[in-house]
Image 1 (cartoon, helix red, strand yellow):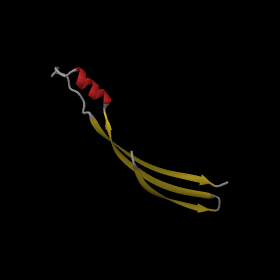
Image 2: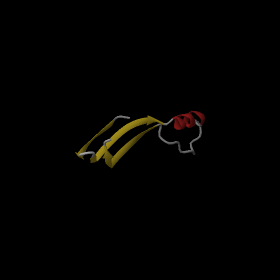
Image 3: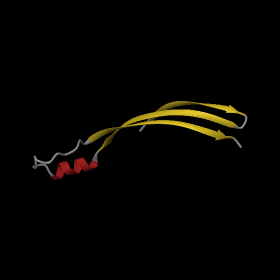
Length: 68
């Protein structure tokens, strides 16, 4: 899944603070749904989840750092 993001870091001497933001989005195959669909072809009363799903990730990080 590709991630895109950016951030900034400020250093004063050996100490620093920073913030970062990242996000990503990917499409994945649902192997369990494919297996169920193949096993239960004739059953109409069972709801089978989608074979593909989209997963989105958002990350925000604030941190302190020390350079030794």
